[in-house]
Length: 156
Image (tube, rainbow, N blue to C red; front, side, top):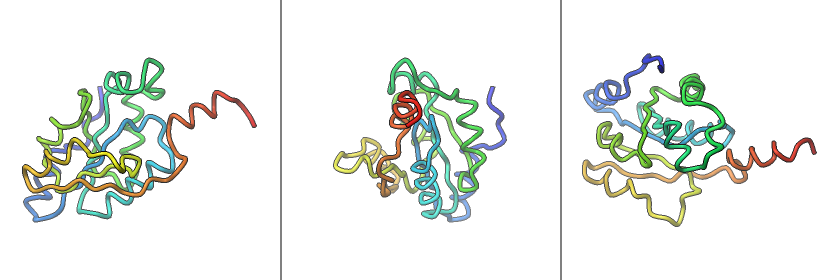
């Protein structure tokens, strides 16, 4: 079981009650790297709190294949919670975070620029309550998949 030291829904409600901006970002965050950290830091600067929506282990397997995740959910959540820019972590088991986003109703949904050129399916959902989807610059060459490939190659 995951420690429930933060309640993403209660945090979002409190920030909204204070007329603040709720920001959410999502992903697998399997092997946390500089690209993830840069994205999350930039996302946090867009509002008054940052809720990270993270795929469950089953959701990661469906998206990335049988060898993933490398790190189990409890470890991924613990590492994310340790980042100063992260105010809360919410887990979703579906293939997309749409149900979770509907519950959190963030003002801003952030994804990395590696999605540029493709419409984010969550964008239409956010418009239902006046939220917006934002693509932040992607730190080129940084990905968990690339890290795994380099690790499999061995020392250079």
